[in-house]
Image (cartoon, rainbow, N blue to C red; front, side, top):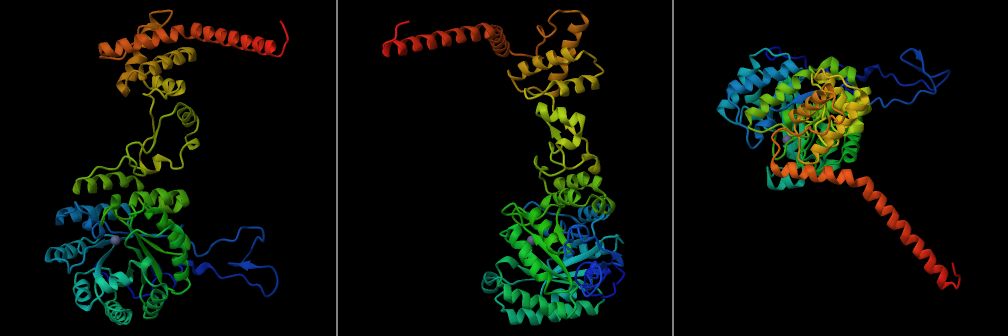
Amino acid sequence: MCPTPLPATNGTNGHTNGTNGNSSYVGIDITEGPPVQNGRERNPYAPVQDFLSNISKFKVIESTLREGEQFANAYFTREKKIEIAKALDDFGADYIELTSPAASEESRRDCEAICKLGLKSKILTHIRCNMSDAKLAVETGVDGVDVVIGTSSFLMKDSHGKDMAYIEKTAIEVIEFVKSKGIEVRFSSEDSFRSDLVDLLRLYKAVDKVGVHRVGVADTVGCATPRQVFDLVRTLRGVVSCDIETHFHNDTGCAIANAYCALEAGATHIDTSVLGIGERNGITTLGGLMARMIVADRDYVVGKYKLEKIKEIEELVAEAVAVNIPFNNPITGFCAFTHKAGIHAKAILANPSTYEIINPADFGINRYIHFASRLTGWNAIKSRAQQLNIAMTDAQYKECTAQIKLLADIRPIAIDDADSIIHAFHRNVIAGKANPGSSVYLPNMTEQEKKKLAGITAEEKNLPEKRQLEETVAQETATEQVLKKAKTNGVTA
Ligand SMILES: [Zn+2]
């Protein structure tokens, strides 16, 4: 898409101004007769839809090759950038954002090289709000330019030292220049949530008036809460007619929730990076956003993005920046679809939706029943035995499960351990042993573990007698107390 200049329509993904293609909303005629919407009679009992919400028609601005380059471990060669850009394009990212060509000569050449790939994703680059960066950017062949400037009092005082009047004048100059080249332009404030709201809205209104395609809201320090995001974006939605892009850092763990709330409030574009890599602990993760959005509108997400590519894109980027995929990562964390507790496993085996909000198959991933633990249940063991082509009665599965739980109390057990217990138990069943669990052990048990097992087994054996003894003592004590009380009250037995 790079070499083709786009018509300079005002925002809105090629639709109309404002609400991301919500031009179908024609309002409700309240003058006379029944209310009509889109030519059809409106059901007066239907819930009122929030027509500003964009959870069913958002776009992703993938910034692994811009924000992600600011991650502490990141150093991308041109080959690696191209590999990542192609993977994101294949996934279906609407936009791919690249480091400013003003950052370094190699960055400029990388930007040109990616623009020449002819990807379906639109290519953006991210620049400071000044004419020299803008001139450099438009010459690289990008589809759009993302302009940014700090607007919080902290940044105006201690970073660039410019006031709002200067920012507005320069922003308009840069926007008009980029637009004159027939490519998209976005104007974003930095640290939006710590900027003066009146100043911010005035600035956005001014850039909207000169035809900027998108305005950007950025939680640069990760301080915003979902409610604050909703308030600001909804307010902004009422002030500008162009699209609204949002960018959330994850310092306080709200990046995905904030992105979702922004869409609910009328934002149209969300910035992401693979695994969230970026400054400090990064931004909204691409995979995490997909997990959130598939729950909100499965048809839109599945129809638009190749979700089964998420895992390999994350592995590609994780390797490039030398990190592991976090265990608790949505979708691809190693245990994201692992069910462990016996009651969970039982329900999952009957109907996976009992304990899952996302179907792992949508992401090309399998769910896993973790049966090798002391929390396991006989349904999980039965399912595992069947995978091993072992058939027993339900009573035998239950006894085998009891043996696995007993051994799992001695030490943590692996899948192989649980499998060998099932096999050994089954061999004893076939051999016709009366108590098939009696001589089933963990492979490679140490002397200490055997001693521990003997202790637990003996204790379990004595358990019924011990319980009986305790009950008798308790009963005797109670009788003695009654007698004592009766004597104190002057009553003789
Ligand atoms: Zn950022």
